[in-house]
Length: 374
Ligand SMILES: [Zn+2]
Ligand SMILES: [Zn+2]
Ligand SMILES: [Zn+2]
Image 1 (cartoon, rainbow, N blue to C red):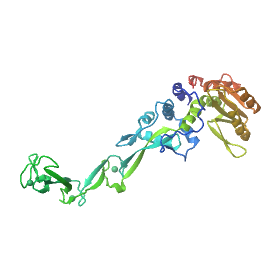
Image 2: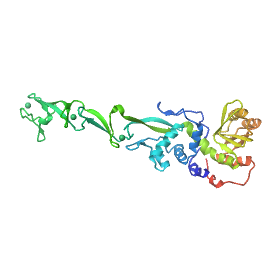
Image 3: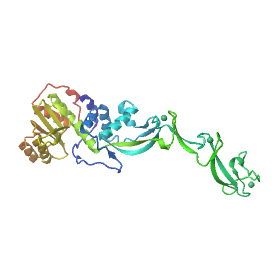
Image 4: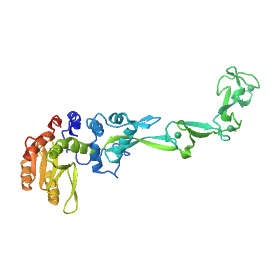
């Protein structure tokens, strides 16, 4: 699992992991939505573990993709080419993945287009036809009624047409200029099958895939959306996957069972979330949070970590500060018995975490995370 990440993380620069954690939503346009229900952290974390998802979200993080804009496709309704790239070109799997990422709140979406589909087979390959209201035949012809201005003769355009020109069937004069020599009085439709005339033929749809014929009353409609990554999910992905990966790997090397992020109920019954929760049987419980900033980190994250820890009572509390804590914050951490690891990046934090646990050598597969630079 770890080796999956090295290539991606190599290319991703993630300087300010927690700078924008104010839970701001990017709302460019009022119709952009992310799904509020059914959005569970666990589902998102599972998806972040998927290699295809990592590749896709990594491209959002790098700014290579800003928005997934669907392209219309007769057989697929809509396609998302950038997503197809990460699922071996499988168009159906790509659409399912997009839906899934929206379902768990990683994507937000915006209405893009409404596509008319066959109610029987859901194909978008649907024709728009007009049929005779009397016998439903598609074999209808449009007829135009003309009036010769000079003599007042009114007749079908067919009866004016002679060798490519227009001649009055009554007085034989040539009609040249529309609006001057003659007027178009209107049009009607004549059925070649039953001969009936009508002003307005009936619109119908015909499915070119299954042949089903239907009207607007039973037409199927499919909404097609464009997608963006939600700001929250982008932060979460960077923090839990890209930043936490080496830290989690180190904890696993020490035989901990690791949840990133994890939730745990305190004595008060309240659920507290930590960037990592590591357990060893029922005896050991290590909670770990990561705070990153461009400047020295002050006491606030120490205080909020302590508030959670006070309720949870873990055996060990670790705060990873990237790059470092202020002196006051360090003193407060010592007072609260919070172990502090100061590091320039998460890779260094993982190394220092190894030292913290007093463990040297016995490396698992270190080489696979060597090049993970965040
Ligand atoms: Zn007819
Ligand atoms: Zn005439
Ligand atoms: Zn059909």
